[in-house]
Length: 524
Image (cartoon, rainbow, N blue to C red):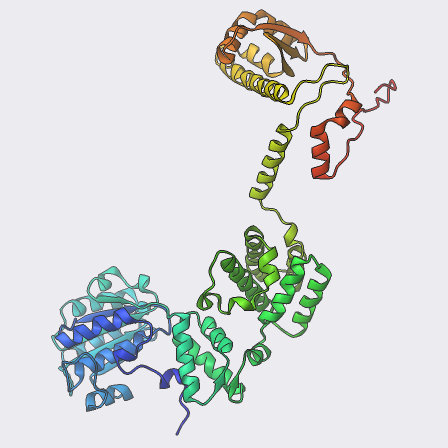
């Protein structure tokens, strides 16, 4: 007997044998059993999920000699001839190669003739979206009011390209992608039938690669079975199809965690020498980070991950944060997009691997902002020491209260400047240039940097006092003073400040001499 590919051999012959299309099967079975047959059907969905198979099953069901029944018998002359593809009353047309209006006119002429041996004459038009606009227009009237013995079945992978005028005249059924577990169970079935031993991980990989298409899964299975000598293993698949493999990727990612760029680049060199396509490597590494991201978010279903959770590196799952994994995944997706226009794909990969080798040191923008916020809060909790001129130290609670008051006065300054901008721009500008608002009891000293600002504020001192009293809810005296042009930094006080000590510790820095020598007069 001639060899038959699995996709043809396992094509379903009735509605009960359909995989993953329960809604479609149930609806059509009830329609056939009740004799309520529409004059036009539109089957849409991804490739390899059963659209053409269902069209043939429906053609058999409505022409079966044992009709009405929810399933074709598969034994009568009509069922057998349709299965073999030689039924005169079931006409299959490839929409991709019969796109012209003349092809449709032939159909329109043929529908006038009654079926020869069957109850219905069925036209199955595959890839119907490929028909031209004029061809669709020629079909409109025929589809809307065909003879009672005509049934049209359209199949398409791109339903959005079918005109709305055609869709509105058809019963529409949307076929969905088939689940990974369902595809895997079908592969186990055919392995048992063929007496082939297959590892579950290998079948799971085939199911994952088929991306929801059972026909693609059968085709890939046949290819792998041809070189597996009766035993399908993931190692054979890796070797023959040029895959990286989960173990090698685990080792690579653990080097990322250890910040070992030398070893990471060595592994990449070995992968490239094996002849593995750069795109394939990036795809597998991206899938790996996608999977550990899902695991970190609580997703542990094998059907989603493509492998058991135990197969992924425990070190990577423990050490990498969700933000770091997201960064790695984003970097790899950008890498894949850029590789098409790259000067050298290997260079691009090595650069990405070098960056990923320091992934544990990566901080996202959110984490940086949170760290800065914590530093600010920590600094606020440290008491401010009195100046070195011998002023008595205040208690911690008094210092905190005074610090809060000082901050409030800075806020008052900003609000007062904003208020005066509306009606006294000169005063607002002068206040904005002030360097310090210092409170001593009920006295507020405003430090000005230049004489012009000093005079402008003094001229409007009453208006300024009114605004300050209103905002600070008190009765304050205001004194305007000019800041000295040369103010030396008290280095000893600065370096001994607790706030500075904390910043030095966090950022691993040191206090430097801020004095700058002027070359012209040897002054500092």
